[in-house]
Image (cartoon, rainbow, N blue to C red; front, side):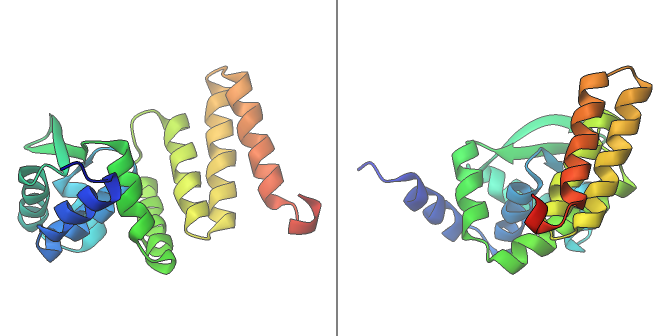
Length: 171
């Protein structure tokens, strides 16, 4: 019988052990493909334990396995709507903490494309309640964009940083 996506996602999550459920939550918060090395850094597990958790979620058809990075694959949700459902079920304080940790990870190991990486750091910092860190990332991304002659991207980054810096009453 057909079931709703929230029911299907809940059923798939219920089939997972706690480590694999946690891995799925990290993938949902990260919003991109996530490998075992990054998951290990985010979750505090060993790389082997992180890989086992990702593999379990893959075998239960919650995550898809994409290209190989190093010796480990990268994982994403089979459907964006499943990722959104997992994200939605996380308590707000847990979501914020996970976003802060993802922002920290991205600052330490930037993603491909420095300008896009700065925007991603800003997104996670802001979702984690770190407005100043988000503004710093936006300004850095704007500087990088300007250095590459990407004037519109630079202007957008500076504008977003200015908006963040304004008091809430001025927005």
